[in-house]
Image (cartoon, rainbow, N blue to C red; front, side, top):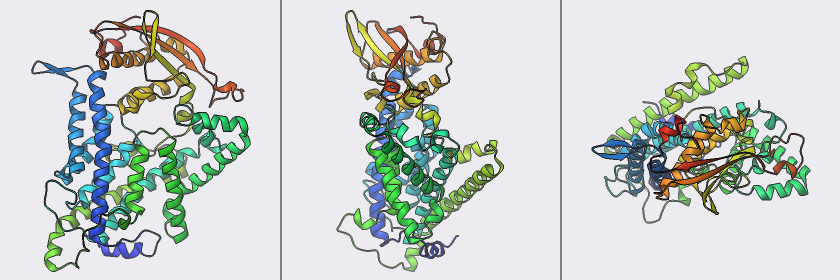
Length: 493
């Protein structure tokens, strides 16, 4: 087995945080396990609920239920195991092995499930029965095991960030220092886009200067996160800028669970346990020979986890550097299931594709005679409405729809029967009809808009923000409407 004590002593010579004692750390970790469970329960529960209306049913023993809804309900129950401490290690292991695959299957995979994979692995390794309704209280792992596992979590996040910045430095928006400003004025990504658009109108130079500063600080953070941790002041920069980046995302950027998962990650690694652990316990006594035997299972799990993820992280960094040096794309094996489902990848986010998603959108309206009612999907300025708080509607439909529109040569043809845009609109309308318990057929008007908030096309603010109607069509949704019929484009408006 590897020497965790040797790893801990090596970390003592860096800016990596030290731990107070095992018992206090175990309590902090139990609290974070509950938070992870709540996040996963919220995500899985909403996907399960929405899958009932979004997917076609499969008939089992005479009853029709979408398989995606059943799988989502299973993920929800496993998440509650983390929340209430019912077989938490088993639940963490099962979620680690299945949640990414579930997300891929339901087309909701994103950076949050990716980052959750190593976190769930850490819960499987380190949880010792605190805050648990069922299961025995076990001896907390020694501090050096906590530190070794936290190091792996940090390396996974650093690798993830390193892969992202390698994509950033090739993107024209990033090179020009425009990424942050365009992101904040994007009605699809920013909660307070109106405030930043007003800032641009009042003082475009200062907004651009802020964007350049954030881009430079973020590049340093993502590119040199590991070497910065070798010194005390470098570690201070990593901690502080990490919190600025993460909390800024929580407040303004609409990234679903991702910022909250990053809060859990950063808290796990950097927040002292004494800030979070509840009172009433006492420090764990020094280990005896009998205690060493009890730690055996924990030590074995920690060794396998740290050695496995350490090897995969080294493979990831090495290949990423070689790819940059050789100026070639990642090889085919890099996208293998092992690295992908281990949560190690190079996210291509907040680059041209994401920044221009706010330039094209659709507005769906229910029509009932002279009355019309907005479907809470996209708003008139392209802003997200209530339905897009669901990962199923956001990642599974809206985000894909907007990216597809970027590459559509003719948005009108793209939204005619047989086109991908038509099928996406149909599924949203059908979802709305079924969720509201509609029985009689309903007519939906779908209007396609675009502006030039990111692209600009020679326009200046505020003209570049003005929505322009491109195309309009209607759908009729009734009790016999199905996803399969929309995909086959058998229904004509």
